[in-house]
Length: 122
Length: 108
Image 1 (cartoon, chains in turn purple, blue):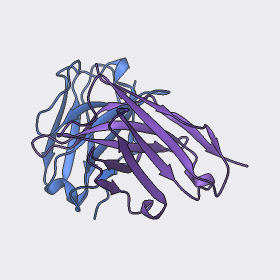
Image 2 (cartoon, chains in turn cyan, orange):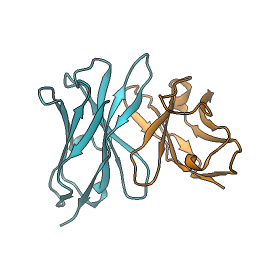
Image 3 (cartoon, one colour):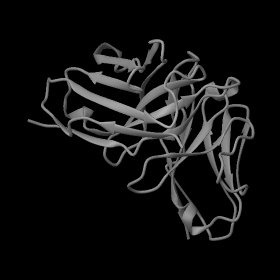
Image 4 (cartoon, each protein chain N blue to C red):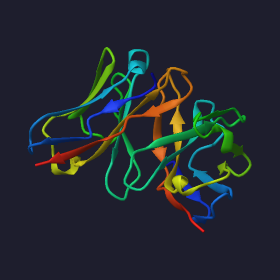
């Protein structure tokens, strides 16, 4: 059974860089039919797609975050990561990692991590 | 436009049928997928594409599309169906993702 687990600091200071890692177990991150994604949810609000990455390194970012965002994959550890720079209070959210299945032109998140709350505060 | 619009809240009587809708131009070209989120939990996939239902999802949950509108229909709503529901699609770019604002379903 595929499982994803987010990890990283729960508290980040304003203007600093938020760094999160998602560990994947039960499947290879090098699957050719999957992307690996980050989604966030501010407290009490809806879901926002942050971006996704392919195991070979191709990235697709939300245009509103693109200038601050870096995603990467470590196939040796079966992990992928998110770095969001120059954070503000508006980046306080529950951050989820998820697998994005891209088979037969369908595009859906079939597995999600439990989420990690990241608060931006001094 | 890459936006997906959902009604913020919908209610249904126990055992009745409810339709949750999602509108957006991108839906003319791409299928939606639907996610259920209960309080304190991560979202989970409940329907995708034309007729995709993940293992464990009952067949009383179904999806459809007409023009620029995708719908999630729950037939014979149960108490456990009370949750937030989000639609998602590709945006006009094709490789980006957009979510609807979510619909809070209350089962009365």
